[in-house]
Image (tube, rainbow, N blue to C red):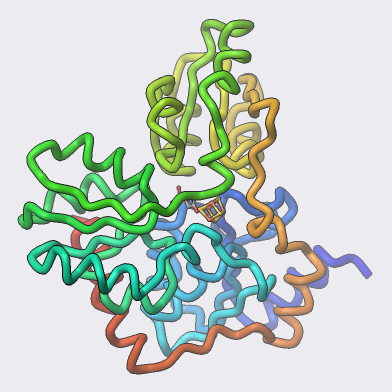
Length: 302
Ligand code: 13P
Ligand code: SF4
């Protein structure tokens, strides 16, 4: 059986939309209708007229699509694919922080589970965070779960007080400055592209810091011919596709998100065929969480 052809056939028959995050395997990105960063995909899931969406990513992404579009059927091909950083945000710890800082606005990264979104004022993604923060009047902010993205945002808003939850992405946290300098010493003209989930010592070496799609766009528009890529290696697929004449170097210590790689063609096929792994969420919790995501799109789009 040719899985690619079968998936295309099923997709057409069912009128399904396949979304894929930029960390997905190349063959998944290739078959998807739309690829993008987490903000873009969330927007596309909301705007799509299709009532069947297959979300190739991790659970919080598919869950966010369901929160915003409760009448659509949202499927997650790799049912077990979670984001370990999202799982680090514990509701009891957040409740304690809220008690300690009752006036603070709660801003959560979209990489959070439903219970956290339900008590958040607004969600952000790495591409929308700075824009959204410009629209936040409150001076005190509880930001969770990513301490690195939180610190990156805080650097841009020195007049605000940030209380940072101590979560992190295991894939990005592992990177050390020398992982980069061992490449830039050999390639001193190469630009260094860094995701804000990396630590400050690593961000300090960046020529550009941005979300997955911002990094790809930057490389595409830059006159430079070579880049050191400091984020999950899935982005290399689109980078090379869009820039066949440029060179992209991943770190020698490879950066792979095992959860993002759980999705493969077989799982995508099975999920589409059986319409399995549907995201089902409690309606009361969904309504509470809706506000934070709605605010994200309101404040991130204008
Ligand atoms: P982007 O918003 O840049 O796509 O990032 C999502 C993510 O999970 C990064 O680790
Ligand atoms: Fe979560 Fe990190 Fe994987 Fe992104 S790369 S989904 S933050 S574990």
